[in-house]
Length: 449
Image 1 (cartoon, one colour):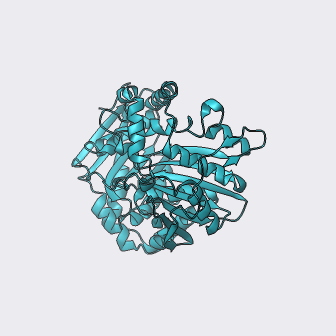
Image 2: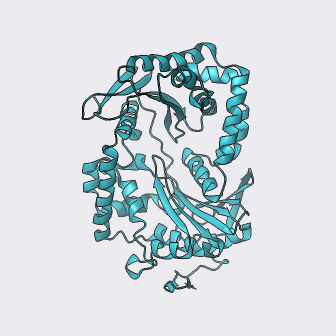
Image 3: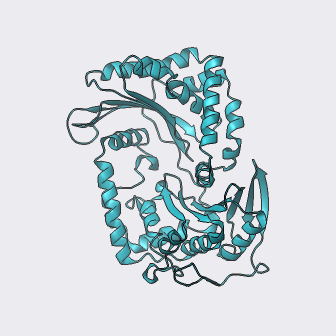
């Protein structure tokens, strides 16, 4: 097959298997207007979410590999591999000006990728006429990325620059200190970008083995969001993905929850950062029934100007900003609360105010009007976070990473079902005084203590 792109070079694509020879898509289920299929020959999961507002589509591959899969001594490998996957593949060679970054931006496409704790995703927003090109590129780098030695040194240097920028950001260091303390004996304790010494040690052979082990159909979900029908999705999969050999099934292992300390205080030295206090409580995995109530509890505490912490801290001048969030992960997560303030002498007062706000919910719960308000806020956030094909794909990506894409489709109904009793119960069960990490900035320079 040959594709011509305006003024771009003519690219010969790998020979396409015929529809008769390719394994057909097998329907699995439809939830919330999204169809799930399996490619019978190699185990690739396929999601199709129609979106007809414009003649565009997002094609995204989510691999079940993230920083928690990085081997000891090679922390940062998943992120470095993500960088290397943009340097070309056998049929789309950068040295011939035919890589993804040569071809797709030339037709107006947007391409990117992200690595997180549980997953890596590669996504292309393209005019609908260029969807076959995007599929061909993604299929080829699934099979045969170049992983050139010279490219590795270039990307290693870029990643090390990113590492230094992150390490020099006091807010990033505070956040990492919290996660390192909370997940001390778990892979989530290590930052996604990795460890400097490990990044320096990663070889081409390491990357190739990591790719071979994790970047294959049985460990991937292909998501297509856009202006196309099921027949077109089937044709794209048959042409570009169905002929890729299976290399095993998805990596289903999730490390056991960490052994949490009863209570841990972490001080992060900083000479110029705004004073901040951060609280983190261990919570279950992202699909646990309690996580929805915890999401609403986060809004009760810090979801805008009507929230409790805004009234208790910001409105009274004790803090300039407050936040609360839930990490929905394949493994155990965190419920995090933060407050930033101006007065460096106010650490103890801010800490007491945060702990007291959590304690009140444990003891007294929330009233029906308050819960109804944050449910409306949560519904609005769901809608605005799904306002186009990229946004829809990104939300599906996180649901896939957590372990069940259908959680994307059922989120609104689950949140609506949360009761005031649920909110108080999860606060009492998970936001405990005897099991949390408390971190704060202190004067000076250096690392966490």
